[in-house]
Length: 286
Length: 178
Image (cartoon, rainbow over all chains, first blue to last red):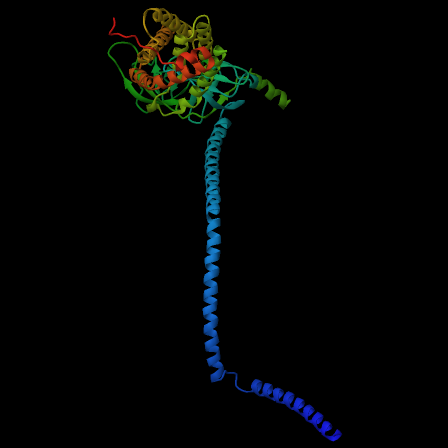
């Protein structure tokens, strides 16, 4: 009885070792042998792969539909947000363009300021005359900054007008095209003198030029510097038409202004030597 | 209270007119809602409120327009006294007459401004521009009825007694009985 038990135990140990050795041998054989699937393996792969493929497609489809639906819910909000962002960027873009345009204008004004006798003051137009018969504007500089009646106002293109009145922070400017404006000028090529008066509309008249004076279309008109209001040589306009009537001593000359009075925005006030700004300027320098 | 309100409204319209409306292109003209308010004040308000208010508005207009001080107060006061005299003899409160009333007032005031400016500086070649005047009159003609209705509404809001009259339908006379 005891012998038979011992035998059974030995057989189990042998079987265990035999199985382990067999597996090791199979492993060694499969590792060292050719690296390809055999026929049944390929068949199994084919069948199981097909199943995997179908399941994966179905899963992917479902997940796509699900995520698509979820995304759709967010698309409206995102679209709205993007539109708002686009509007914001458009506004910013317009603001940048405006800033660039302003920068260009101010750069030109600075260039002109360098050529003018100091001190000068840059001003912006805040209001225009609403009437049909007068041409005046309101600017954002006043007596507190040294602006006084009679000071010339110019722009990059040329003469704009002169200060008519000033409050502490604002001033009224009489434009050169107002019928009540008069500026001493001369024809640049031959120094013939005359007086420029406004026509009320956009044009100007050159008055008191004798008939024998040689004035032609296209001649440039500049300030003469007489009267100590405008510095000499500032462009006023160019001759547009000359009419010599039989009667009278003077020619009738129409002048196209150098400045487009409808497009004015930034202006330069040329300060007087005795002005407050000049005094401050001197104080600061001392 | 209404006088202060009209004064404030006129100042707001003046600011609008001298800043935003003047930047419109020339071919569009320069809408003049302030002038319609001035005619409205001259027609609807009684002395001494109306002339005092018009005098003040004229003095303010002098600051922002023209170079001769005093011509706007003269023009507005004259306009008021003429309208005041006419209102006793003519029915100028009716809606039908508002457009011709405003247009004739505009012609009168501008003619007066032009005349005074030409008289004060005869050496200046001030030229009457019919094209611009007619364009302005056209704009005023378009704006008169809605603005008068708006000012009437404001007036009724400011004075409750008038509000009652404003919303109450006027009884017409039975002309067949006469």
